[in-house]
Image 1 (cartoon, helix red, strand yellow):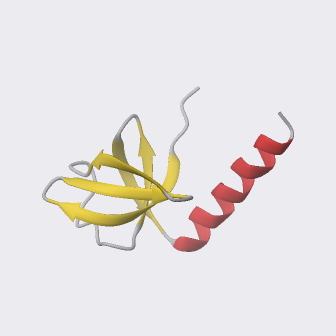
Image 2: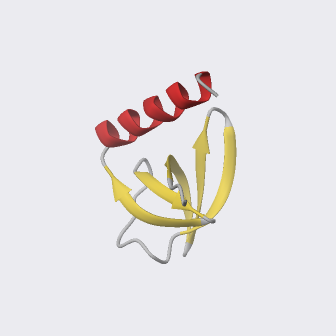
Image 3: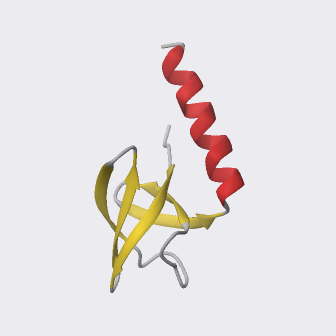
Length: 72
């Protein structure tokens, strides 16, 4: 099973960006998403941003992930 995690895009440098969650930052490839903007939430899988999603969807998904962590 594959999982894509919504992360906030905080920097853009060409086809690469920096995403952040909980103070942890990672570099991701942005070549698969059209016109990403700083502040967007992107779904990240295997180092690639695969979609831009709205803040509400990102928060729902992150809430579900946190809930799963509590039950594991």
